[in-house]
Amino acid sequence: MKPEEFKAILPTIPHQPGVYRYYGANHELLYVGKAKDLHKRISSYFTRQVTAYKTRRLVSLIQHIEWTVVNSEQDAFLLENNLIKEFQPRFNINLKDDKTYPYIVIKHEPFPRVFLTRRRIDDGSEYLGPFTSVGKVRELLNFIRSVVQLRNCSLHLTRQNIERKKFRVCLEYHLGNCKGPCEGLQTEEDYMRGIEQVRNILRGNLAPVIAEFKAQMQAHAARLEFEQAEIWKRKIEDLQAYQARSAIVNPRVGDVDVFSVVQDQQYLYVNYLRVLKGLVMDSKSLMVEAKVEEEAADLLVRIIVHLRETFRSQAPELIVPFHIAFPDPQVKVTVPRSGDKKKLLDLSLKNAHFYREEQEQKRRLLLDRKDEGHEMEVLRQLQEDLQLPDLPRHIECFDNSNFQGSYPVAACVVFKDGKPSKQDYRHFHVKTVQGIDDFASMREIVYRRYKRLLDEAKPLPQLVIIDGGKGQLNAALESIEALGLRGKLTVVGLAKQEEEIFFPGDKESLKLPYHSESLRLIRYIRDEVHRFGIQFHRQIRSKGTFKNELEAIPGIGKRTADQLLMKFRSVKRIRELSEDELRREVGPSRARLIWNWFHSEASTAPLPGE
Image (cartoon, rainbow, N blue to C red; front, side):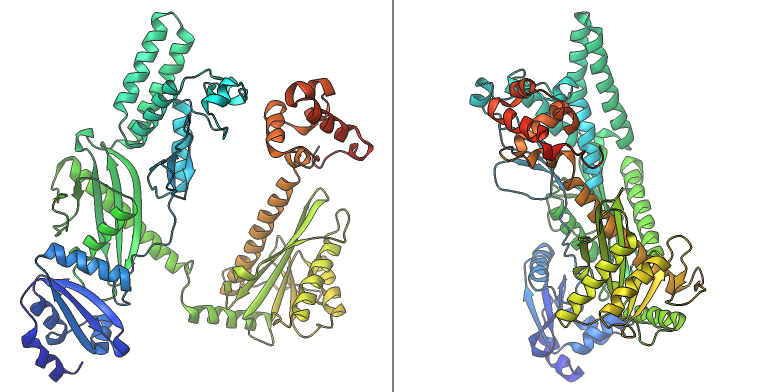
């Protein structure tokens, strides 16, 4: 917008609270902002000396300005927030979070199960959270199950099924982790008391849980049942230890959300602590890129609203480092100067500083490399170090593995422009090799990989890395020559231990400088093919485990297999059972199928791993 054009519209801009919108060419929405005084705020972009490059860039692109007058700053915030969410203008900070956070669900069913999930389903179940960390949720669930006896099976425990004696207690009952509702050994009323204890623990309200456990302990002690009393005493001690680990302020602080912010020229680093009944239940840190010059208080308000919506917080009080105009008048805003709330704010600020240092360290170590120019520089260095005829913009790496000669598999990872191209990663089942023969396995998978690329007329890599040294390299080269690709791509071997690089026909290996960018990239590629291959190998081994041997029996389903394995713990023990013993567990028809399967001539060979 030219200065004379802005001067023409300036007298029409009101001195009222509202929302303003900057548009660029083709009516592209560039930026949405709010102001207590629209006239002063909009004119500040054009009449003062702007120092920030991004703000200067925004001003240079503005072609058209629109504004909407509202009754208050709170109304301005709500309208601004809605417009940003709907249109995502490129000069506004982006708070969109594609991550799916975990919940703890109390399932809507008889004798409700309690478990981790990432999906909210509208089925009447109760969802607690979300939480920031899956690891924290699993740790919390393990703690809950150590103090509250809940079922972890998926049986359909209707009253009719229980009365018909359809189920039997499992190992969890005998270990004392479950009270056996499946056999009617626990009433639904008693089970629901445990569910209420779970709710209290997750909400930080431990006092009623501890009080109930103490009553149980005292009742057992009064009846001289000292072993049972000791069990309840240990549970009380576990709860008190959990409370001691989490409570860092007076419980009278109640439910609060704590926010702190650290800012530099480019980013804001925000930490959020969710505090329930004085317990820090969760923490979240995030980094936000400031697109244009904005007041830290305005940015913090938007971030707070976003985080409270994301984590469904209903805390009636905010603890923040400076005054903010929060849009919800029902929420109290506190800027503490001393006391327990100041301790919480200091803790949050410490987390924000740690998070900033972590992000800066990542950038220094190039672990979050977003600079395409740097990637090309590393590839050019790799081309020079390996004397490659072409820039290696497309690199592939192979690795194979087996378990005592069983389940031979291989993996291929693909890097394009120095970055993983995960949609191009490939797994291989080795089909033509029996026993342990890494060379033959490498020969097969390299042939299959490049035969397919040739058949589909897809581009070939400039560099192929064979993990394993000279033997695997020579085996791969046999396939390369068989396909007529010698000279059309460069193939090198990488020794597993010394990180030496072998070229075909060379007696001496090449050792790159230990801290060179080229070797860092090669290590990254090698580690990635190891990770990808091991992940696949574990999947294959798990599919070949004892459990699936049972499910492979015609007429035997997953439920029967699970039932037998839960009782006898291994297929080896099940194989040794008599037909009468099997009949008592699964009935005559299925017992006959299982016994025949294990005692036919075809099943005499041991299973892998036995």
